[in-house]
Image (cartoon, rainbow, N blue to C red; front, top):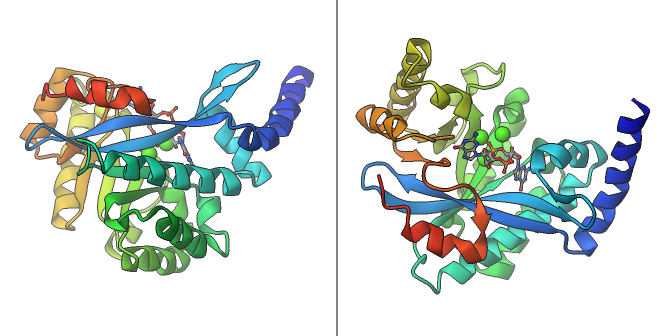
Length: 263
Ligand code: C2E
Ligand code: CA
Ligand code: CA
Ligand code: CA
């Protein structure tokens, strides 16, 4: 307990410096279109290169950043960095890809969030239609608030995806109300979809339901060839996972992507 508490405190103090010391980095994971087998986008995933601890994964510090409020500044840094990267790729053979960015609920609830994101778009001159904002179902707790903010984001031209779909305890109620473009089926369902009949049924049903509601469907955590066969047969639109590539640094992305054409 005491040990845990101490490392917790050290991390929190370090979070403050990490931004000014440029210790955060974005990695990018390819997103593949399952109909044409083409690269269509990248998801930005944050990494913390801590001077003593080495690479710390977001699972270890995002919850702390959310509790302490540091997620606001970190989230702004992520958005700006992802937009700058997207802009850079516009001048390469990656000129048509989209960029997905994860937003935490706390960020969306900050009063000036819309102003901040508008500012970043103006500053980086990125086309908002090429940005996909990923939010989780926990955002839907206050459906009226979610509606208002998502409507604004849609009006500004952004794409909106529901991340980790099916993982939480939320109801399906929000699906018919909210202006959403995509759902991302949580990787826990994909993992066993070719071996477990229940998972297979759930994934198939999610895809059919999403399509009937006019949403696109992304499968996360695709690790095996037979996942792809299953997903293509069931008309899933897009996929991400270690089968194609883990998240990589920007300077490795192009090389990685050239090897991706194996769908
Ligand atoms: P997520 O948004 O659901 O991202 C997918 C996670 O699954 C990533 O972990 C990714 O590396 C991992 N993954 C990708 N393909 C596979 C696969 O085939 N198999 C398995 N087992 N895992 C795979 P990562 O990068 O550690 O991120 C964990 C979570 O941290 C993310 O989950 C997201 O919720 C959060 N996160 C990451 N970056 C950010 C950020 O910039 N802002 C915010 N608010 N949250 C972030
Ligand atoms: Ca995500
Ligand atoms: Ca996810
Ligand atoms: Ca997640």
